[in-house]
Image 1 (cartoon, rainbow, N blue to C red):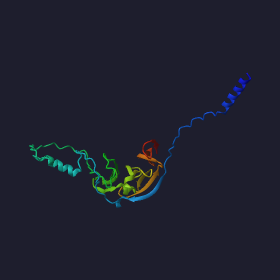
Image 2: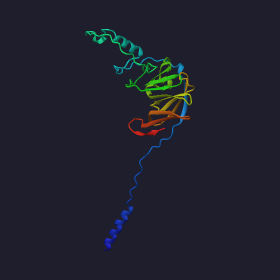
Image 3: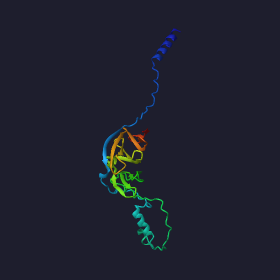
Image 4: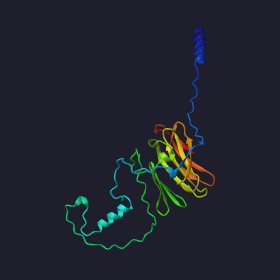
Length: 256
């Protein structure tokens, strides 16, 4: 019995020496705090150099008209008696003139659209298009290019590169946005600066988008602020992004 009591006391002592398992640590969480806008410069749209059409090879949409002039020319050729497309010249085609009933015009303004802009490293298809309309102008951005029209359809500012507008390398940008806020009488535009993990946005100094803009940045350090969505009210300009890790493989959360 004495030996049994000794063994029991020894076993109890060993149990007291064994540390209890530490409680499992709570899963790490990331708190996303509102970003702070910093003024980084100004840009005068009237001084931006016009750029030519991109030379990047992209897939052609066979039924998409390449501008109003080309569309009217194709219609005129198709209306000719006996017209044969150039790639079918060896065929014999007999046609009769047609007298179609004119359609009632419902759209009073047709804009040619930005031709792309150079450089355009992504050669994106379909294009990333956004359009804003103000009291006197229409501002269109397509991938890495911008163009501004009057509401009468005239080109107010020929196609220019968004790299010169936002003062960023063309290869580092994505997801352009542009809008007009009638309450403030200002234009707002934004784009992602991918390598620097930030959103750069521009605010016009008047209701004329061909004039000057102030440039600001909102840092999102260590994250990729994907697909900014913007909005305005009487006293705020809001940018919402989907935050990913810099590799774009892990969603972190929605950031404002």
